[in-house]
Image (cartoon, rainbow, N blue to C red; front, side, top):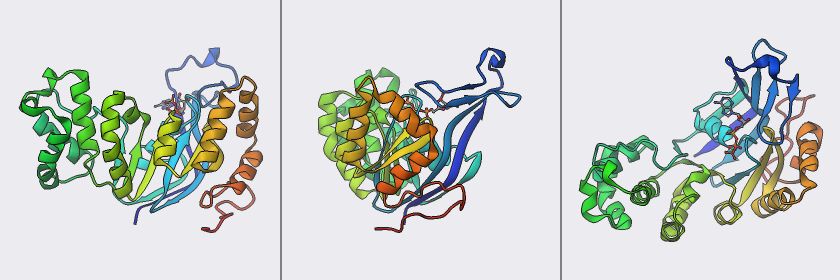
Length: 292
Ligand SMILES: Nc1ncnc2c1ncn2[C@@H]1O[C@H](COP(=O)(O)OP(=O)(O)OP(=O)(O)O)[C@@H](O)[C@H]1O
């Protein structure tokens, strides 16, 4: 059974080569995490006090402005980052699909890349070999599949990458928005495969700026702001609240207040996502919600 438990997790990046003297004491910009300069080196806090419990069957979208912490949260769930404070536990085989082209070798053929990329995403060589024909059909690349990848156009590479990525069997599927940043026509063809992929994965976490995609693939969502969860709940509520408010000129101060004030964020959490555990400074780790 796939599962993810994040308990009061922080991800902080010390920046050893920053021009610390030119930074303000504590900077909270409209985009990005908090930069702290109290220590010897400036520290960017990309995620702060994240407590989330995800279980088999969850399809969770991540929304937030640039630098809010979505990619960092995906990397934390993937185990690429370990929390600098707090804890992160995951059960199940993770397939991080952050960059469609990642793991592709330009010097080997499309067919060989299918196997290599699939293994990169946790599949065995034998399972990928068994899927080559159906992936080849989907890509419609024909004899090009025997040519080195470096001879492909960008669109041809995307076809190949999408064919592979949508053929895997992940327990925990982590999708970054790159997957939606492909040619619209081809994506329409890939949509059915994407749905099948999401349907057979145990647990999905999907970071995107595209409302349509989020609502299509996710049933719940987390809104991140300055590294904190400021709202969680049904995808339609959270995504629409986020896109609605971020489109308004007066929205930013409201979002900022929620992110600045963990109590306000906790209250929001209490209203919505059944399995999100709100941070509680008196009783760390206390679960405020039972599974509903
Ligand atoms: N390797 C790193 N070193 C230092 N700071 C980092 C690193 N990775 C991310 N950050 C910082 O952490 C914060 C969160 O970044 P992250 O990439 O998670 O945001 P995001 O929500 O995915 O943004 P976007 O929508 O623009 O992709 C930002 O302030 C970013 O500058």
